[in-house]
Amino acid sequence: MPDLLHRPFGTHGKVHEITPASAGWRYVGFSLYRLRAGETASEATGDREVILVMVEGKATISGAGQDWGELGDRMNVFEKSPPHCLYLPDGTDWSLEATTDCVVAVCSAPGKGGHAARRIGPDGITLTPRGEGTNTRHINNIAMENEDYCDSLLVTEVFTPAGHWSSYPSHRHDEDDFPRITYLEETYYHRLNPATGFGIQRVYTDDLQLNETMAVHDGDVVCVPRGHHPCGAPHGFEMYYLNVMAGPLRKWRFVAAPEVEHLM
Image (tube, rainbow, N blue to C red; front, top):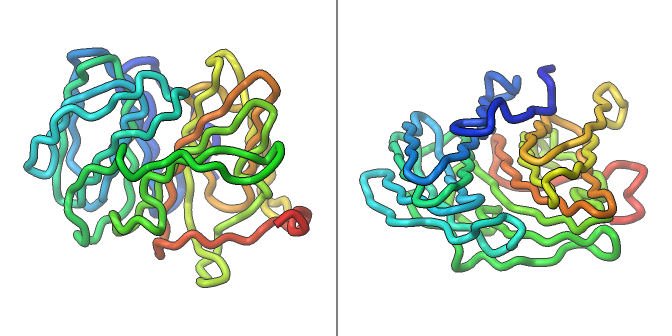
């Protein structure tokens, strides 16, 4: 199994590129650009659908034969305002020019040509609490199951307050047995506030054949090929992550870890 924890391979330009081949799985792709004002990026989607997420900053974007104008207004991700995003089907291309310094995530999965290009957010995305007590976190759903924007992709943002847990109670979605559970690969793009902080993510299976606990830092990506995958934000450090999931069925069904079933 390839390493689960991915540090950025630079501070500028494309700083992450996770493909199904590099991750050792079949569905999810994730790339990240950190651009300065005036710089450009472009890609073809090929046989994959894509959601561009303006994590921070602003850019003018063209894609699928259309000019989408300037997207983005959140200059710091921890403003927690809803993101500006763009969905692009397979068989298209896109290009952008940064109008401010910006961070742009490229979320991808197999496309089937079933949906047209469209803007997603900020309208229609509402920061929503989930959990209780020190399990409380706040969700910006970008393209989850209830939003019929995509063929394969499931994408969401999560803000975890300092001292809280997230992706908890521990759960897994690593079997193709709908409606009990679905097989979904997943990436976590982490940010910390302050950026000098750290968080904790564990990825483990019930039999502990996979059992990794990682310190995640600002800008890291964690791949979750299978197993449970809780996160912890230590006191003093607020955590954000952008989740990308995909599998053979665009449904999110999970099974709790035996030790936390009583919390569900």
